[in-house]
Image (cartoon, rainbow, N blue to C red; front, side, top):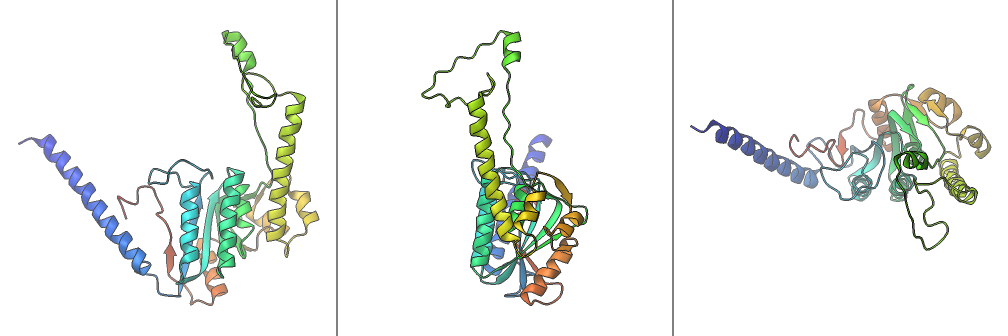
Length: 283
């Protein structure tokens, strides 16, 4: 007997069986919202995790912070007439400012569609992660959650001295004086620094505008400006400053979401999107 072929056959059979089972469960979930979800009585759950970035593609190979996956899950929650309150579980240090803005816009559309939005902060919900949270109706954080970090930065690497030591020369042919701005083969010019600083300042003001609008009932713009210097805060510090509403864990946030929507205690949870890129193998 060829044991090698037998082992490979058993492995492939297991993979195929897992795929069929996952497909069956996903189809069933699409039709019924999952076994635990009762019409109109569930809390919708969307996870926003990892470094937020717009990767190419949208598949099981994508990272948790993949922009398109998150947008798709938020749109599913928006269009789901069986769910009136959506819980965003945010565990992200931030990432791309543009990605954060796109997600924040979909959160706003959730509210425009009549959904109540509650945020549950995990270990970290900072920078663009906080930008997303600021638009929610209620924010719940752990006392030790790392949050805040309201600010923007750009970084340019300069390897000119290293290239000189290695005898590497870089020759750039460009259409305009700023086309190679940020090239790692040379330092920025003073004019380029001004351009970069103006971009940072403008993006920062957009960040401030979004947080000020979302938290206007809890903190004034003047107070916000004083602490929006990039500092990281604990969840308890953020609550004292008006950036967070309540302290508690994930299930405390679920209960708060249920109360805001008038649902019963310990409501079922309807999650949009897989919890892991390997969920297609282990449903």
